[in-house]
Length: 98
Image (cartoon, rainbow, N blue to C red; front, side, top):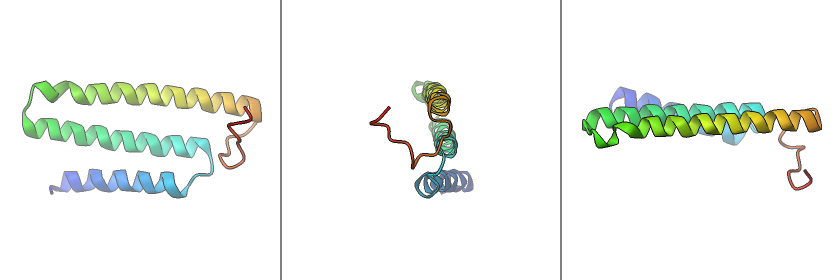
């Protein structure tokens, strides 16, 4: 395992741990999710560069497009939640009631 792969794997694990243990606010959960997507993007880009495959060259851009869509939906949910409830604490939100 190269040092770049090790660092990206560590970044993904740290973001996953942050998502699992720090579930207080919706914004912190979204930031951890974005860190996970960024590490997946870097991993997929490194993998494509190592394979020298023209077929897989579009895969990182597709992942980046989905990450941007996920971020926009997450921010829209954050704005709607903050507008209706006045806060973004995950533990006190009951999504079945909305």
